[in-house]
Amino acid sequence: MSMNRIQFQPGLSMPEFLKCYGTQAQCAAALEQARWPAGFRCPRCDGAVYSRVRGRPHALFQC
Image (cartoon, rainbow, N blue to C red):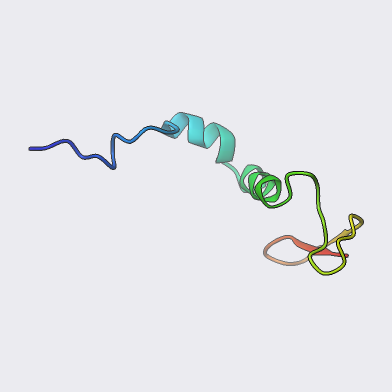
């Protein structure tokens, strides 16, 4: 049988992945960092001041 290239591709091991992204908070922080590497910027007005709207299943940033 040939080697499964998907299974053996380079990247994070499962323990490394879980260490970085294992909880909801870690995953959300990583997504925010990927979306706004220099900090939040409003896509409409380019402002940096925001509030987080609570009581939703996901984070909502409001300028």
